[in-house]
Image (cartoon, rainbow, N blue to C red; front, side, top):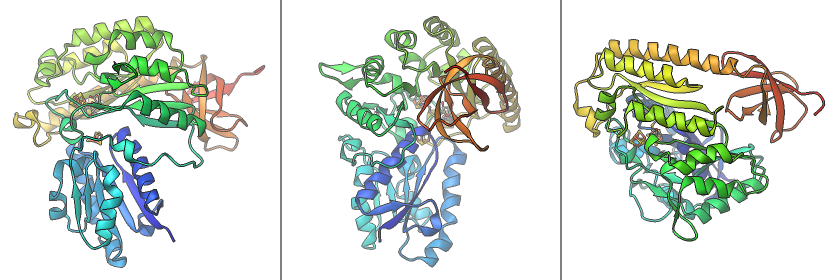
Length: 439
Ligand code: SAH
Ligand code: SF4
Ligand code: F3S
C-alpha cells in the first residue's frame, strides 16, 4: 500500500508549481497524493510569508492537526515554503507537532528528510544550495493533465523592495538554463499542455544560460513559440525596470504571447515609490505602459498595489488613484501594508489602520469599476477560449480567453480545445461566450 500525502498550498503561483514538484519527488519515494488531511500519512503545508495574515494562517492550520496526530501516531507533518525559510527551527519550537521544515531551495532533499522523520527524527533544511533543485526532481508523471501548466524559469529576487520578504525567503535571483526549460516545455506539450505560464518572482529579469551566453526572457519566449502544439505563452511576475525593448516588441510580434501583462507598480506617489525602493517614478511607469500599448494596443493590464505604506499621506494615496485612472487596469490586486519582520520598512511608523482600511476600500472600488468596464468592453468581440474544465451547467465548458478572462460556453468540444467564441455577456467574474456558426 502506498503511503498517502496531503499537500496544502498557500501563496503565489510558484508555490503551486513547487507543490506539484514535491508531490512528484514524494511519488518516487512511494507516496500517492490524497485530497484529504484525514487520510494522510504525511501532511505538507506549502506556506507563504508575504503578509502577516498569511503566516498566521499556517500556525492556526497546524494547531488543527493535533487530533489527527493523536489518532494516527505515524502521521508526519511538514512545513515547506516561505514561512519554513523565514522561521526555520522556530516553527518546531512554536508547534512541536511539526516533524519536518524544508525551505523552497531544498525540495530535492525532501525524500531523504522523509526517511529521517520516519525513523523518528526531526529534519530542518533551509539551505540555499548551489545546484538547480529542479534538475534533481523526477520528470512530471502522465496523469490526466489540465491543458495549462506553470513552468518556473527564474527564482528569487535582488530588488529588495523595502516592504518585501521575497529576497530573504527565495534568495538571490537565479535563472534556469534554456535547455532545461525547453526540455520541460516540450515534455509538457507532449502530455497535452497547450498553454504555459513562465514563472519567476522577477520573471522578466530572466538571464538563463543559452547556447552561447545568457538569453533574456524575450528570446526564451520566441524559442518556446517554435514548439508545435504549444499555443499560448504567458509570464508572471514582472518588474517595470526589467521590461526591456525586446520583451515589449515580443508583445507585438509574437502571436503566441498572450495580450495580458501583470506589471505591479505598488504606488502612484514618487515619494512613496522612493521609500519603497522601487527605483522608478510614476511617470516612468506610465511612459512604459504607453510603449507597451504601442506594441500591443489591446493588451489587458494587471497590477499590484499596497496602501498604507509607512508615511503614506492622503496626497500620496490620491496619486495612486490618479495613476490607476490614467492606466486603466483590466484587473488588479491590492493589499493593505503589512509589516514584515526583518524588512527595512518594518522599522518605520505605520499609518493608522482605519485610515489604511478606508484607502484600501476606495482603491478596490475604483479597480473593480475598471475590471467591470474591461469585461463589458469584451461583449460583442471574438476571442479564443482554451477549454479547461466542465462548467456548472450541463454541456457547459469553462476556459480562459487570450486576455485571461474566465469564459463559459456551451459546446461539445473537449478540454484542451482552442475554441473561437463571441462574447455575449459579462457577469460578476466571468464572461459568457457563444460558439460561432459556420466554424
Ligand atoms: N515578485 C512580485 C510579487 C511579490 S509579492 C513583484 O515584484 O511584483 C506579491 C505582491 O504582494 C506584491 O506585488 C505586493 O503588492 C504585495 N506585498 C508584498 N509585500 C507586502 C507587504 N509587506 N504588505 C502588503 N503587501 C505586500
Ligand atoms: Fe518583492 Fe520587490 Fe522583489 Fe517583487 S521586486 S519580489 S515586491 S522585493
Ligand atoms: Fe508568498 Fe513566498 Fe510566494 S512569500 S507570495 S509564497 S514567494
